[in-house]
Image (cartoon, rainbow, N blue to C red; front, top):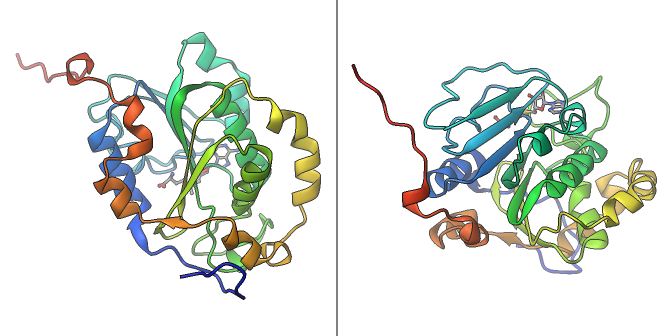
Amino acid sequence: MHVKGEYCMYIRPKGLKYTRFLRRLHRRHIFDWYLEVGCRTGTTIAPSRSKTIAVDPFFKIETNVIGQKPALHVIQDTSDAFFGTGFLGAIQARLSFSFLDGMHLFEYLLRDFMNAEAASRREGVIALHDCCPSSLGMTTRNLDNIPKGEWTGDVWKLIPILQEFRPDLTIKVLDCAPTGLVLVSGLDPENLALKQNYDAIVERYRDLSIEEYGLGNFYDRMSFVDAQDYCDDGFPDFAPLALPEETMVIPTRITP
Ligand SMILES: C[S@@+](CC[C@H](N)C(=O)[O-])C[C@H]1O[C@@H](n2cnc3c(N)ncnc32)[C@H](O)[C@@H]1O
């Protein structure tokens, strides 16, 4: 456990694996609209039973991603291009839950967060993946030299950025293995603070390594929430999104 102000080393999140957490969440809740940015094989889209929008410039689907979904929109493009099309507005989708796991450079995740929040319900939740690196090597921004194993890039920066520029948000850092899962709630789709400060934020953070920022500084400002306990407590931040069973649209199998 990290004690505030103490010299510290990297903390590797060792709680429930993020894929298990997401499976349990989708088993518990059907959302109005679920958005996933960065899907690759489809492992994390598959358990959703909600109307789903999946965005990735390079899909490599290896599983049944349709499952029980009433609708699945698959957009094979970058998230910036996707949000730029105005697709969400055109289909009048207000997002209940978004899982952002696309390009692992912080300015991309910051834009994904800004765009997803602007299209979210106020009671919605946005999950950010890979914000808790456990070595300096996995935080590299060098796209020509990405480590073979886990690569978080520098999306850890989203935690201090949101803490500073959006103190109105509720930020919980779950100890999901292997690189954490940040849940952001208390969303405000009209809030322009990130947009107005975007250039200054990118300028300030782009060349800053996590060790220059200070590991103590990083961990002092947050505390890990036990992901298993969070599930057992009934996913508290998602409670306002629960749809009553009778309004759920689950397609039934039609047999001749
Ligand atoms: C770590 S993988 C996602 C894995 C998946 N969510 C899972 O947990 O199994 C990251 C994905 O982000 C995608 N990606 C890269 N650049 C992107 C961008 N600009 N917009 C959206 N997705 C992007 C990659 O193609 C890759 O499939």
